[in-house]
Image 1 (cartoon, helix red, strand yellow):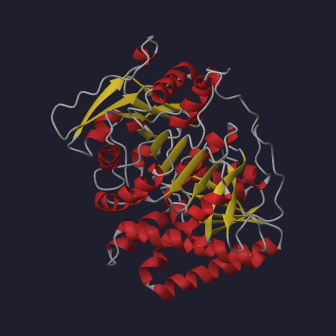
Image 2 (image 1 turned 180 degrees about the horizontal axis):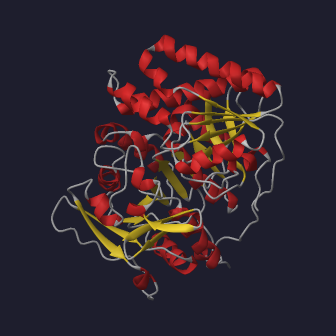
Image 3 (image 1 turned 60 degrees about the vertical axis):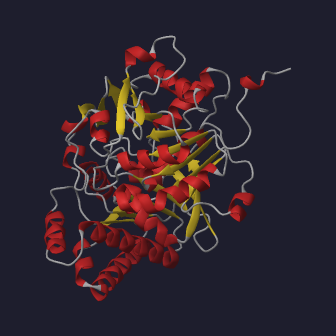
Amino acid sequence: MKNPEDSLPAGVLVAWYGDDFTGAAAVMEVLAFAGLQTMLFLQPPSDEQLARYPNLKGVGVASTARAQSPDWMSKELPEVFSKLKALKPQIIHYKICSTLDSSPEVGSIGRAIEIGADHFASALVPVLVAAPQMGRYQVFGHLFAAMGDEIYRLDRHPVMARHPVTPMAESDVALHIAKQSNRLDIGLLTAENLTSEAQTLPAAKPTETGRIAAVTLDCLDAASEANAGRRIWQQRQENRFVVGSQGIEYALVRHWQDSGLLTASTPPQSIGRADKMVVVSGSVSPTTAGQIAWSRNNGFACMAFDAASVCGGASAIEDEITRVVDAALSALAQGQATLIHTAEGPDDPAVDRFTREVANSNLSMSAANQMVGEALGQILHRVLDRSGARRAVVSGGDTSGHATRQLGIFALSALAPTIPGAAIFKAHADGPMDGLELALKGGQMGSHDYFGWVRDGGGSR
């Protein structure tokens, strides 16, 4: 008779809540391409929706928490955590960006840990941010991230050090998160510790009542990743609530495969070139700027959306949306894939113009950014509906959350891989967007030809 410990448990293995849409989708990608039936919902799924998909091993909920305040989290997270807990998953994961996008005021990881630890009565909160498959490495507590062929310490990263909302000035993961909560005692499990034979995470040692013990895990290669996954999995009963990037799922999958709990599967190949494709981008990242430049030189019609129009009221926004929609439809009619962007990198004059206009308006920067994302979503919906295009990309983590909500879809499932963390998905909806092929890409992610790769149908390279 087979030992029950030699197989994965029945039911949901991982339930996760993503603090932005692209990151939430990246978790789904890891699990789905490992052969586990997985879906990402745009809101906590209803019983009726879950009944349509009875064999899910991974269930996620996407949000815009990364762009929200601690007060917003206090109001929103407890209910969502309760709904995820009701699924009786083995692990509940609060998914954060692999480049730690957060601050005490915006997207506070510290506040999320407080709420989760209290809700789930956690003895210890494991924190795993690194994901080597994506060029994210934690070594002796410090986070490093790749850009192109170079690897930078996070506080010296050309993109993250200049992030427009949460610039990174600290590479020590524990120190960065500790600044966001006055209740955390955060330890470190180093790469050296991970090679030991010890099967457990460090014992929880909060310094006083009401404080929360957490531990960050180094991860820089396959061996440390497998060891991190083993520790998280084997102590899931005591420490069910975990925090981190999709590195959590990469580590779990590697442990499951290495221990024979899960058979390695081959990811699906290309779904074929699209006759029509629409891209909207709210990213100001230099990485996205390079992708826009490649697209312009490779058959895409690239056009700017004036983000500053959101400061001019409803009429100004509608006029700009109408202008861009008409231009996009004209380009698609001529056989060109269409790319609509707010800026081409951080040095685009459009960035300074937008910042000035917001400062002179009665809008907060957070509200203005949300309005831009929603406008891009409206543009995308209108262009898809009127052109018949069935493949689309949204570029920018926060943009993806705001824009995708305009499409009337309730869930995503994985179709084909591209770069890790930005696969092509199938949209599930009760309306015309059902079956839409949709990719969501963080601003700093992707090869220079990423948009062309999606146009060609993705697939492993």
